[in-house]
Structure formats: C-alpha cells, structure tokens
Image (cartoon, rainbow, N blue to C red):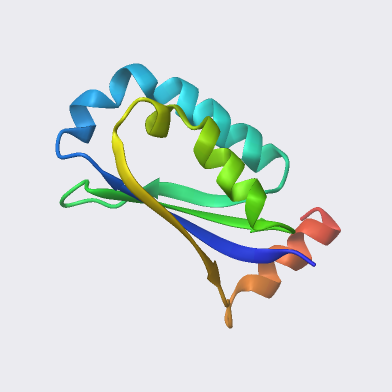
Length: 104
C-alpha cells in the first residue's frame, strides 16, 4: 500500500548560485520520478531559499532514499543535510489517489 513521505533538503547558503549547473539533471531526475507516479510535488522554500521539500507516494521508503543517492544536488554538495519522514495525510490525499486510479 503506497504511503506518503516528505523529503526535506537543507541547502548550503549559496544554493541559488551553485545549483545552476546541476539544475537540469536534478529536474530530469524529478520528472522521471513524477512520470513513474512516485513524486507528487517538489520545490524550494523561498524567502530565503534554504531548503526544499519533495512529496512522494510510494510503497517503500527505499525509493525516496534512492532518489536522494542519485540526485545531482546531493552529489554536487549543495544539500548539506536531508531527511525522509513518513507523512500521515488526513485531508486531500484521497483526491490524488482517486485521480491516479481514474486517470483524471
């Protein structure tokens, strides 16, 4: 049964400048995870840009951890820390699940 997981990245102070050469490869990885139905949402928190959040719905936490290991942002050193947490969704999750089942 799929569960929700939140991946949080803590970025280095100059992430905006340093992410440019890694951004396309990072986005490609994220788009591939999205196409497989694993990644639901992702993006940086703003004002300041100091962390990012990615929401996954997967059968196994290891899928999220594999994403981290493959992520150019992590490999490139702009993520100084990361954590994966299970997320108990009480409102809104059923809409996503129903849409995935019906293709809407």
